[in-house]
Image (cartoon, rainbow, N blue to C red; front, side, top):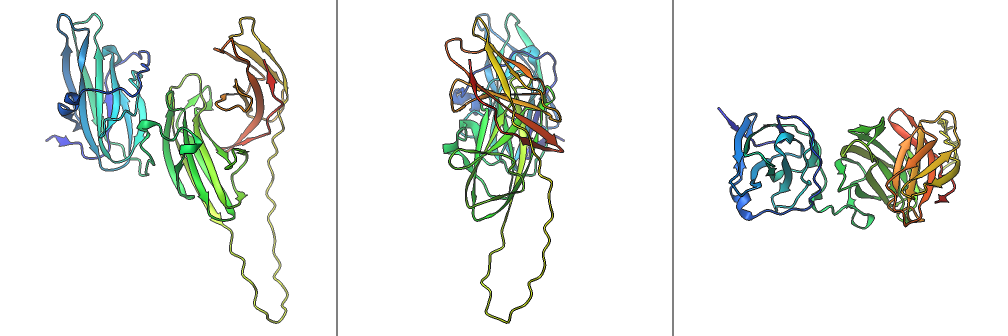
Length: 373
């Protein structure tokens, strides 16, 4: 007996070769596409044949609807041989994903009603068969926001979260940053954990950075004493190489300091002795940027730094702005790095910092002097 999907959805199609990623963003479809949407069936292989008329180069979009009773991780794998490009849409027909044709795609959404809309291109073929399968995967935490409008892409529109939260998110080519804000209620100790679900070149594909309300970056914040105020968190895509995106999970924890009580006037007693455990401070040296040289065609530049022992690697940041707003990041153990695909008409600013990974935590040193080319 077939079971209609009433829980978490994972869509996977059965085919092979990866085709190029499309870059259509915020696409809309006729209302008839949604009205004719088919209901997905749980744990069943769906198969049908699409074909075109004599003058048709593309097939009409095909939609599937499903309902999620709980926050869900959605994985979509598509038949690339067919050139079928899925869009994940919410109940208001707002788009979460661009038309992708990678082997798999992952996103996280809250409970609710959703559509997967497939757009097809047959090329010179007259028809082909399309297959996909649906299965369920719960995630057990709340995904905080509807990212279809990318409304959390800067500090001004950061999503407010509780000081003690577990957040699951996703960053990819067209949504490279997610901003969050925590109101720290009083003086206390802040800590966090972070996990990137994918890597590129041996390094995490996503990372989080912490900022004060005035925009100043906070380093080595784990188990750090904070005063009352606003704490900003930016989850960002750090890889510019082999992965199109990365899901991430981070947990924040805040413990307020005990409130001081005014002692009552009593007889003098000898205060109890206290001992303080000495934690080993991790010191990361400041990077030394030796030189930055621009290529003759000005489309690339090479940065060289001084080698320092005992590090995991170096983080190179380069931007066309002096304040490094929107800077691109490269993390590597190499002391010589070439930045490509530059705008030949603009000057670039470069700075570097050292970092070291201990367990699952990253520790960063101060940035080097800035050089321009």
